[in-house]
Length: 424
Image (cartoon, rainbow, N blue to C red):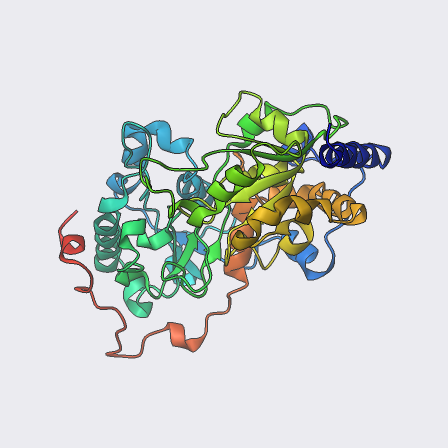
């Protein structure tokens, strides 16, 4: 055994011992995933972040839910129920939540916000991947419908309306549409989306960034005893190369995943592989650090899984905008590594003081942190549904600029590629 390898193994053993002797447990218990309290050492989220996470939106806003023809939502799910389980399912469950939410109003005249329930990611390939190319036409059709049937869109050009657009690139709908940007009809609306990247054409100011959907019941079914040792130092399962879409290997994840594999595939600190074992969730609960690198988009469900299972997320995605960033103190619970610094990842992680690791784990053990990342059914206080409402409530009251003056218009109904203007 070389001196370097011995030092590495000693570091892992020492860290595991310190974590166990401090009796800090970061894996989510069944009660925590479901929303209950845990008998463990946790740390309250300091300052305004903790207060915001625990806000109750009821009484602070009223939402009118448009009753659209079922072809825009329910009929699509009936045709292909796989939509209920993929990472974009937040658009479906947000609709269901709002229909029975205490913030819903049946009187549009008293509404603060108007919600347009369009399921743009539910047209799936046989492999279960969304076909977003029709999404712009579908969205335009829905907006034309509400603007013809109700007067509210026309009063603001959509500035008091919100849409859930959870695809990889939000309301751009596809990476091939980046040059076009966000659908012109949505330029004044508030977008609730998973995509978040600073200075990117697919992220408009004022958007609410949410976590991708991860099935709470599935995660709860894989919980392990909360005192299980965290014997894995760094954990990752996923692609390092996308040979089908990026055969030359230079574009996918901007090379960050390829760098992970080339630098650390034989490093005993790193448990990384393309295999996706049946013990994936259990392994995350045994790990200290879980890698969350960008892929084609900067986000993935790994971020949700890491937080729920108490595994410190290592975020490798330059300029990412994280879910509920105005409420969750990501700098305190995670580790940020620049994409260009991936080759130094081992030294970066091993140099983090043990006190910092323990504090991150205590913060991750806070039930409010876990709830904010999940879309449970039925909804629970402080979950992701309520964080979205909190985000909308913080935008109130609307400024006078939201409401159009007589003759004022901001939107060009004929803007965009010719293909987007075809009837849906």
